[in-house]
Image (cartoon, rainbow, N blue to C red; front, side):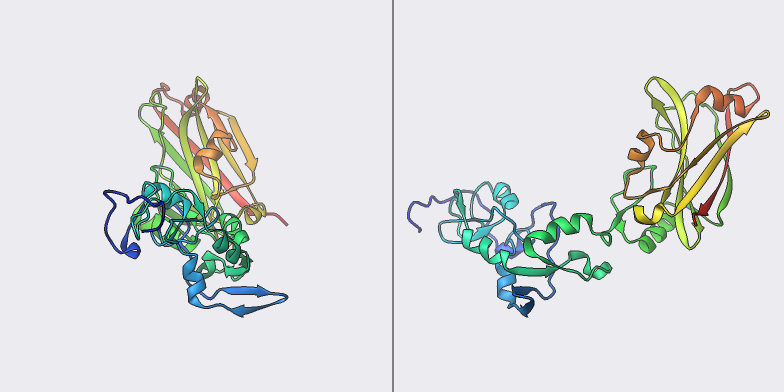
Length: 302
């Protein structure tokens, strides 16, 4: 036993590589790493890469990197998970920093984790994580608004997922005319209609329509989101129109990227917002049933 090291009780006795902890960090990339030497790089051994891999969650470690009195290392997230007990030798971890390993990490260059999705850039070890958080090739969240869906992936994968798993309507064309009906429009809270996806200019756009409370006022909102990056979304514009009895409400805007959640777009009111009383007026009849027709088009800015 190392001097001054206390033995931990009730620690799972398994090989460190087989331990499974629910740690929400980015999975490390197993591809080739490089050690920066001036303007050129040289291939590193897999051993150096493995030294920087946490033995519990198998992700790359970032400062502070902790070590037990026997020298076994652990990332800061897993140190909390294992209650400050080394999963390898079961000694108390204490507060020892592995400064040597942190220094070694400074000399490494690694490829982006999203390399298989198209990012082929190489980054210094400590810049890699920051890049990956904003990498344009990082997976997108599922844009479906009817429920909290945890599926992520690239655009082609999500289009298939929306069609097969959420039964979303898919339409070709850049103009649309949709009718939204609700038998009891006074039940305005959390009413969401089925998402519709349009294939237009070879890209995909999500049309949302839902009811929510704007303060104390019940309203309906319709808006468009672009399945891609914000820089690409800004190349397009769209218009929405709703009306009846010789009156109409119009909206023109720029579709928001699905990088922005549907809730974020809705709460910012970046779309066609229709007060419930006006929506019922457009519906006609005895105003006891919502029958709203929303039309619009998408075009590409020159």
